[in-house]
Length: 220
Image (cartoon, rainbow, N blue to C red; front, side, top):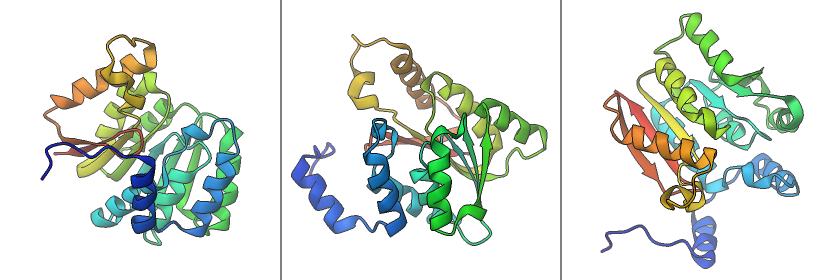
């Protein structure tokens, strides 16, 4: 019996992947492509992608949002888990990396499930609210600029239906959030949102120690 999550050593992580990971070949190819890039640390881990797929399937999600696309691993993971009529509204600031994402989405035959919106995500999300789409989305994944995490959360909470799930990435921030000596703007932004969510009565929450930390917030 344990009262603390196990530390994930390299050997345990290898075992975890060997006995749990069922990575689609298109996801594997995209991950390998991104790994060759300098910015590869911006991509979620494969076991997190699989975990998100399981959440989407458990919820029977159809309408989803992604804030921050990068090369598209997380959106591809979710798209593969969605039913044929499922959709992702994917928000990103530029096509620098989403051009890569689109190629792999197409290769995986899920391009038609993904509505890519290029521009500030705050504007995109507000437009959805203005169109009367509040309280209608099943699942949201937030993984973008940390300074706007609180803004993204509030807008996505409005868009989420009761019982809808918001997943927020990087909430442990390589452990920096627990080090009071570290006070840069990104760390403080994540730390502030974590504290806010802990007492936010509008949602039920859990921080899952997967990848770089994933908060799950279920709208009441």
